[in-house]
Image 1 (tube, one colour):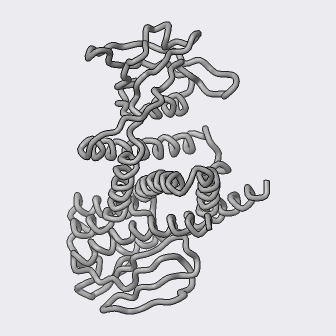
Image 2: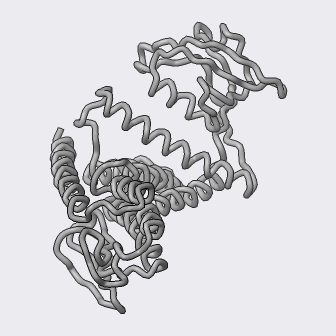
Length: 344
């Protein structure tokens, strides 16, 4: 059951991404030849109008295949025949839809469980926060110029920037104060800590508050995804720590098992939280300026808009083809690593 839920979650998030491309393509009069869920051989499909809707063998991935998307076509409804701004809107729609999905899910989640506001409930002896004068009830609003909206952002900041001196801006009785804090390594956890604890009770908000913090929630996961990529590029984490579809499905399954003892409602909340992470992450990854990804395609389209001249479609297609081959190789490597982890 848990693996069925995991595959459904993964498939719905990808399908919504492709739906963004599909709807904007239709709106701009672009012919969509096939709209599919999954990769590989077709299991079944139905043609309606000019579009074939199909389900593929492997449920990881999906596609919105447009006429003339990767080459020349004389069809007036071809992707390349439309204005550059129409094409930009179609390409950008996939990641944008992922962020919209993450936002809707975030509002639902926060409405159910409340907001973990960055309020200090206690300072710990022997740590810098107490020595710098921070007290119970202080509300952290900024760390080193990064605005803070949730308590978990405090611990994540120290995770991404271990041992770094922090300039913490906080509010006390409506007055803004600043403290310079030196995180201290906790031998037991192996994490750098500043010596504060969060308030146990989450704060419930009304609709407008949840809408506001829903946007902050998406921003938090975008920031987390970008910081994780930065750690990968700088070598602070290795490729062995990457997870592909197999690893993600396993993690969702583990989360399902951990939540099962608390009941269906907590399973729902856990899956909802994981869906926010996945959807925001998929949006970020697709916007990376790499060939074959939406971000790489946007680079070519932005160049066209600036130069007022289209890049040779054959050359662009070759760049994307090379990008696809590299990405496929990376996917195979990550999948092999995921499978290997299953037996460790």
